[in-house]
Length: 359
Ligand code: BMA
Image (tube, rainbow, N blue to C red; front, side, top):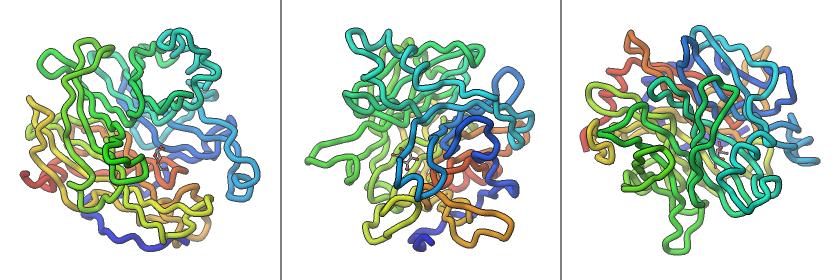
């Protein structure tokens, strides 16, 4: 049982009644935790690339032997709700090593690259781009890959440490590509677990070289974050601005056990903000309450309805990774829940925009 969390969400998003939409049960290869997916509409269907941590499926197995590895799985859907998972992962660690090797001359990819995870998908001019995080022997890095067929990928860039949670805007702004990102700010001796993470944005003429970096938001700007923050799903264009989610972390060392680990002191919530269409480094709207806070049984592990079972790896985690605007104004927000399953919540775009108060 996890502890109650101190914040209340805005109550505008509707969790999909079929949540969790995807779990390890939907996958035919070894899969323990299916979560933190990127989603896009690409070549006439909904595409999902999800993170799969495989090995143990409960706390005891996790404590005994830990995870065996992480790969990225692929799923397709005709409607964004019902998904079919492909029979094999689309990017294994071995494949990621081969893909990224050209960007790491002089390094042995087998020892340099340790984990490839948290995909975020954006379609730009008909090509599918994936931002990813990669743990290397020399730090946590973020990068961008591109594909035209979901089989052949090219890695275009990988950042210096420590930068993760990158998401691409779905079009060039002016004549440059733009991404949101979350470098870890160590000023003052802080580290990833302290009050040090800020959201930034960078521009690129070609998706390889990034610069003109601008600070967007710090965790001290967010009433429901006292720890890390970072971009969520890639932004969507609306008439009023770029609407985009972020994740916000509340750390409370007294929380005790909330999942498989001995202690899991953090609560991850989703927030919402609006950025200027022409100058996206300008924050023009902000919702000062969580858009989504963990409350459902598949987010908290509490009050699991009869006929279901749930044993979340890190309970009280909501990690938004996909946001799609449909023609009728419905916004689909996809999120990893409890680092264990993939879920969907929806709202009308106008209701989301009205949450973003001018700043
Ligand atoms: C972050 C990332 C996410 C994960 C979250 C909660 O640091 O690793 O992939 O969902 O922690 O465990």
